[in-house]
Length: 83
Image (cartoon, rainbow, N blue to C red; front, side):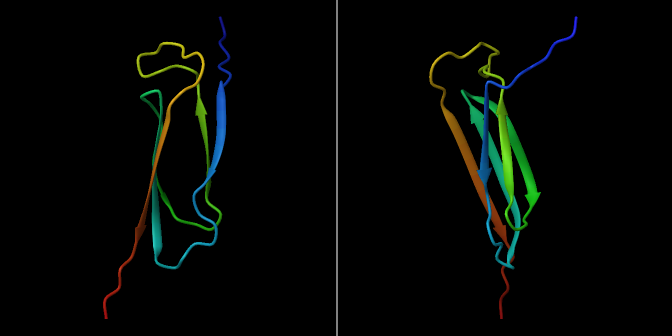
């Protein structure tokens, strides 16, 4: 039996537009109903976007109905130059 998983939810986040020269890395973690759906450390670039996909299930594998809580944490790592 073949299974096709169709995302219940899909959304796009823009993390950067024009990148400052001192910005080196972007770190992102996204959770939906306690389930980590994305955790990445990426090199910074202009117009950096990501897509988040969620299968409609919580951290325990149970199907979620109605509204879902989404937590997104974004961190930016810069190079600090002292003179």
